[in-house]
Image (tube, rainbow, N blue to C red; front, side, top):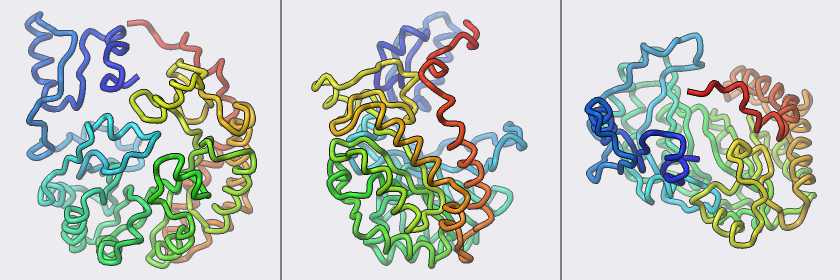
Length: 349
């Protein structure tokens, strides 16, 4: 479990636990350890901010083990409150922002052309995102990141994003029916506009890693076929499927726990590919089998071809990532409960 979400459980496995973000307080943790005065719990520094952080030593990372080392963080947190998402409880409901100039100066020093933003929602703060996109444009980089479907509703922000060098986005579509997205407290996802969004992005040369979560109370066994049909029809470049998972600290966890529907609290199974709760309109077995079917069907060779045939996007990159996901799709069932919970190969410290 994440120490911020379940600090007392985490403390059973560690000498010290930092609750909240550790950057500002970790030097004190190290000093206390050296002086023999280590405390059990430490809390995020009250003046925590992202400004003025030292740049990471990317040169220490073995280049051959990474697709790219050009990973950058501009913001942390999200303005939305999706029922399944751990980001709001982890971030304390805030969105932290680095000064745009610091972000741009860091990117200017990176080798190569590509940049990967790890922010969970790069457009949480519209004014900030607009300023960032405008300052990125002269760098002529290719960047990849995460936004919500709300980017379609803001033509000025959309155009600035395109001009800034965006070539790929991860977008949480989550579901293919309005009832399902409402059940996830993500009603700002307008299912009827998914097709328009995909067309606009593809016309701009932007590929999409689209994510979907199965298992909301509004979904029955028919959801898998409906989802795959939409994914292929809209030509989502790199779809990713997950099981709705009630992580501790989230509204979904509190709801399912109060209803006695959580079946498993072995955190090894909380990898979003195993069912750990009792769905409302299907059995746990149906949910997991449907998940596996959706992965396999989506990554059939013919369906891969149908989805990535777009000369405006980086089709060769889409092909490589689809081949990787295709391997994953056909190996997913090997990771059953027994294998996931067997930790005998982990050495004891």
